[in-house]
Length: 83
Image 1 (cartoon, rainbow, N blue to C red):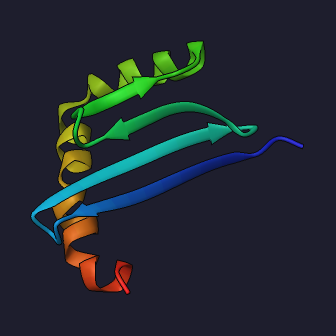
Image 2 (image 1 turned 30 degrees about the vertical axis):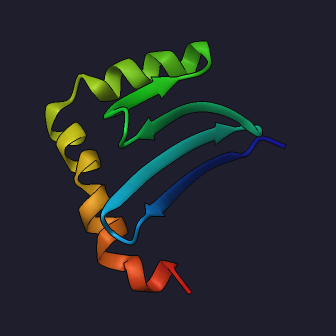
């Protein structure tokens, strides 16, 4: 069985003052690539993931959108994510 999974995570430190957004890509339970807002770009962990990360990092509009997820996805939904 082949399985592809994408996970988006928000990590809140001191409320919404310090927020970390992570988007992780898995294929067959192996992490291929990841975006970390603290790093600011995609990182690949497998040969395929490295190739995809280079492609995604070369798209300025896509990178601007992904970097904006800290505000759009995390900070905007802070009260939903925290108990």
